Image 1 (cartoon, rainbow over the protein chains, first blue to last red):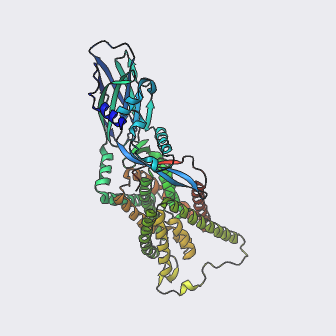
Image 2 (cartoon, each protein chain N blue to C red; image 1 turned 180 degrees about the horizontal axis):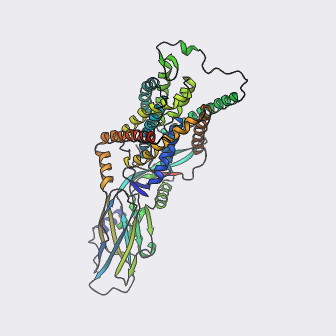
Image 3 (cartoon, one colour; image 1 turned 135 degrees about the vertical axis):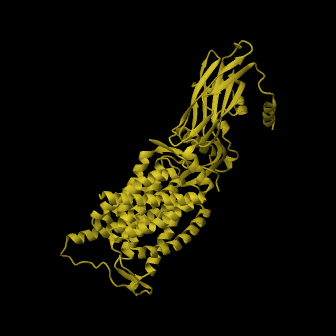
Length: 253
Length: 306
């Protein structure tokens, strides 16, 4: 209760009375997924605007996050039952981003306080909402850890500490690689300035990711006219089968 | 060359997909099996989501079966009468199968049931075929041994509703083919495949059809089963990826044409031995998946538990 009240208080405080502000830009604010889409690289850059000289007590740090649309997930685990391996227990996560990248100027533990992380939901475990999973399976935490590991292996969740270049405590830039297995939606880019582990200023930008051209046409056809799409798929298959047969008759192998 | 697949939402190598399509098409043209039991695990292996792999695999099988049937038709190796009777039985069987599938889904553990039925049916069929075809090959070598008669008069021939199946050279009751069709349709609906690998042995051993018409007739009825499956998946789950399907189809139809030509040159026993080995290999692979400890115990699926 006290914690909740403290959190409410934190959220209600007018943000960040500071005289250091972020001015940021993106190399592109839209990503088109076309047939030859094979991932994309977004350049995120910016500068720190100051009215007064930078305070010299602690160095300034930058944390940048890119977050894809969130969806619910089911994580299953196989166990041995009567000699065979089958899915036994499952845990559901209410909401987990399909993509999440964190890039920083230095090690997160030293540039961000836990309370600030909790407040701004910066690191991956903070972003995932998995309420009440402990009743769903024994060692429910292992399921979430396994999920983070699997997504990390697929390049969908990444933590790049020290990947943000920061010049003269003023100019910063980083590249975030969006992998080829992206889903449609709005990707939220957040930039945090921290000093002594506390967030000094934040900025938010949106990158729209959507399918274009043939990809968009096929996707819409499948979802808006499913019956027609199924019939077209079968007809294409029949025509292709016939065409190959006719072609081979001409060649006579 | 990487290509982004709009429904699967992953990008995959176009030439790899063409290759997978042609290998599966080749086997399909050669043996008269649809290849659904091969293409689904292959697509899954290269990172296509399982639901998309199953639905799009069915679409590819339509194309390679059409291609294979047309090649067989030119050699008059398709028994259309038999095909239609089998199909009629198959429709009844698959309606029952879809109902049973829904019941089992509600009980949970449908995956396990599907895998176990794969192992049991594929294992039994493969072992039976291998034993029979090795024996008949052995008999053919020792020519002086008494010839075992392929077709003997049994109670089956006393059943009513007799019909002439000219291409197969059979004059039998329609009841056994209807029954075989229904059984295969039932299993196919539960196991999510076209059923060619059950249909082919059933036609050879249960109905006594000559091996040369079996391939074409099996492919003929697979066209309808998989076309129906494709449309069902497209309307209920929207999981047919046309971009993926086109690549698999182009590879598949060419492979099927080549496979048919190779299949014709093989002796009937050799064809049956090879099919038996293929079926056994798939059965052993699935059995090992169930018995050995998997390298990854956890799996993620989008969506909440039902």
